[in-house]
Image 1 (spheres, helix red, strand yellow):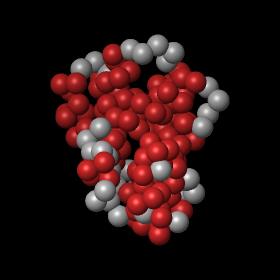
Image 2: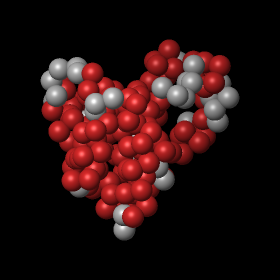
Image 3: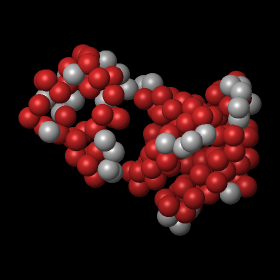
Length: 158
């Protein structure tokens, strides 16, 4: 856990260190007995990030680093991490909800979910994932469902 804390602390200083720190964290992941063991240490180390009340550049760098690492890891770690973020997103503390949103937004920054891309996504995959993880479909594609575009287009999925 101390090694993970040291890596996150160094990633906080500059974006330039991210690639080197990602390699170090990946090495720790490969030496870990299981993804759940690594996730336990990772989440305990990450929890203080949710307590910052101000938006700091260093916190933004850590958010960027964490989302890049989580997106590059295996499915089991990513499942644990998404459950962790969903729990944080439903917390009563506004700062905690904001950090969870910020990490999720950073994760999705490289994925284009505009109308042109979302039209090509098979909605059955999204619905199956939502049912498996007990997440309401509206939370996954909130904007599109608010306007009703996807419900009209893919009504057969429900």
